[in-house]
Image (cartoon, rainbow, N blue to C red; front, side, top):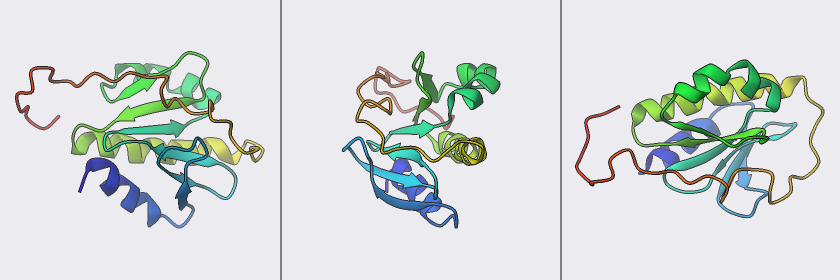
Length: 135
């Protein structure tokens, strides 16, 4: 089981989330009653809809995390899952996203350009392919 599959299974058990196809057309999504929260695009990459306000509030923490990639002007962040700690970061950020969306109006169906899929290039932490200790 990949890290993304494990994270998706955990999120599917949360009472406020349901799973379905991602509105961008690639992968699975979890959504609250109001908004799509996350898109699981690959075995390692998840786009998370944090909102601009939440990204601004947690900008320092997001930029120092080796798992998180930001796209200027996007309300989504990409979380790259390389180890168990990255899954923990994702789950914590989903909680932040759910809270951030409570104050937002329900979204209209997202456009394919809404998330960061194909807008972020994630380089593996270990380009030589040598196994690394857990993060």
